[in-house]
Image (cartoon, rainbow, N blue to C red; front, side, top):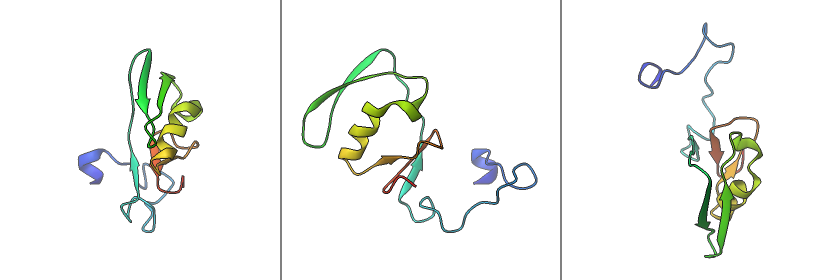
Length: 87
């Protein structure tokens, strides 16, 4: 995985890979979500929500709310990270 996905690990990173992360347990994903302008998506309850694109996904609270309605939470200190508990 390190080579296939270009992951950084010592000595290229000062943080060793975790062996107990939400990723290891299959309860987290790193993903980049891109679109242009505004999109309309449904939350889990079926309510339409307009979400404006933001270059900083960590501050896009509308997108976070839609994700949370499905039980997927944004870790705002790590741009691509979403998980079952936000950690």
